[in-house]
Length: 380
Image (cartoon, rainbow, N blue to C red; front, side):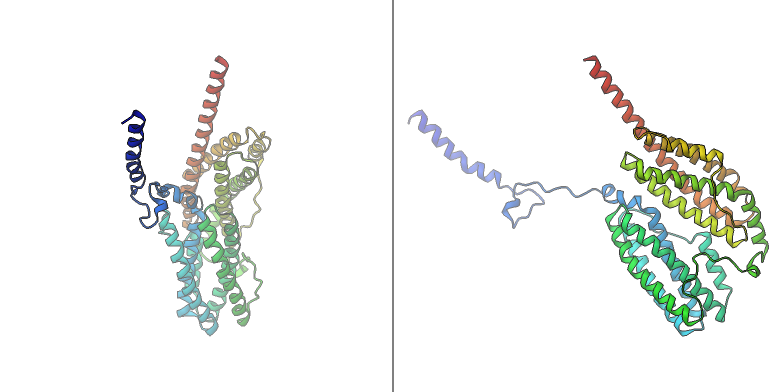
């Protein structure tokens, strides 16, 4: 046999082996679909990747869980205490719908490794306690007034998150919730009208003069607010204004995300402090003092190239001051309401501070690496 014949025969003999090797099935491929043979399946996303976006929305998820918890608790109270049939039927609807909504948010939180154990904040506990002390027609009117206020607030929050939440599943659930809450608000307006309540009741109505200063608790709150509330309000306002600048101007997506969370949390807290002050006859308008204005102006005047660095450093300095104030002055508060607000916020402020420090460290590391690369290029 010639050398050429030997080569051809060897090639033909090897061909089936190569073909069989190409068709060996890879574990995880579809055995019923030959097109997937020999193709390595794409890896499923890891758990940290899957929950990174939802983690950014954790503040709203906590609010949604606590909000439904409050509606179920108040609805259960109204089922037993309401005297008007329409109010009782409305309460039944709230218990059913908000139990379902809470289950959906619990499932989402669990899937993404987020805590599902929530409790009512001090303002919510106060609202529940106030209703527990009422009966008859007074209860019906107070309950439906709260329902109008709560659903007005919730509707605005769910509409915002339906547009701006980081995680698609959070946006989807918020959008679904928006439809349900809108139905609840429409129904609440109808029921409120039946018992003589104006449907366009303000979200935060001023308390009647007879409701003010009823007990020592109110007096203690007023004393705490007199010493503390303006400073807290100015701190919150500055973080909101700086965060809004960062939402527009930050260069790094991670810095924008941090700013989004800061704006959401500090706006919510500002509303809580303002509401507490008004309910205790201590109305005020938050306004920045000279020190806060200088800090804000420093961020405002930063160039685009330096904005992230200056925003983070200013936010970190200020958050450290807030934590210090809460740990020192806040713990000296006379009233449990103020101390609870301080403790609740302090924990989250410390989380924001840690996140801002991490982002600052990343920026510094990138800047150092960029400087080294420029140095190496100039030495070549």
